[in-house]
Length: 378
Image (cartoon, rainbow, N blue to C red):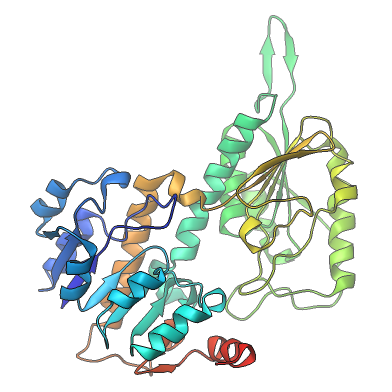
């Protein structure tokens, strides 16, 4: 097959969908790889490296889309990119289809077979294709670095001739992949770390990284879906969460908030009144900013200071670590491609194909997206 790698055009996006080493892997499988000129430049991968790996460098996006049967991307296509896709062609990448219904409609009209990286099921044999977890690892790591840079204190305990410097107190909200990486990174920097998550099952993971797990009284509700994602909770449950978090805030220097619900608005974990409890000069890094934020005062893509607290609405942190983020994303998308096309035709009996596919042959084949599209009207 002819696989196309276009240059990402979304502002601030520095990642590339395929790095040179993965080009070699696909060429060994007798595929042809076309790479738009400069596609890897912002990730520090030169055109020369792609050529040495066996790729063909294409001068512009129009020619690349015209020649490619399959397009691999990081960001969802802009509408002008969707127009360039060959009718009946294949797209693999992040799609955010629930928020991009016009794009879904365009794919239906052009009979595009589209696979969304964020819809890859969280099952054991699909772990190597889990781009969400890979990018969450980057986000958790980078969130701690940003917090350390913004905080007017040092993270580690220091015994100096000028006196003892106590360690910073870091609170991680949510012990998923991003949260666990944030815990590990904060501990490596010498901070005192606590973590909160309504799922008792993650207690051992938190403690194994050296952090203190914050207990809360749990209402009798399921806290996660069968696919391993957090489930939307009742108002009473959220109140219990807020109470447990509020008790820790007066002595907290840094909060890293990672709680998200797949396909829905992020839960509100920190109200404005709770922000007022935090010490002057403390920092909140809200990794759920693009979903509305876990903090009531978060503004996506901005740093605001309210009640003496700096609140950073983090957006696309993986793009700030483009070399390794591209490396990890490239591996996951290559593994998904290999899985999807290991036979002569797509196998929709396979759970990975079935759940990651959004549109096929002019129809929406994902139930959640189809339901959302019907509610919004065609």
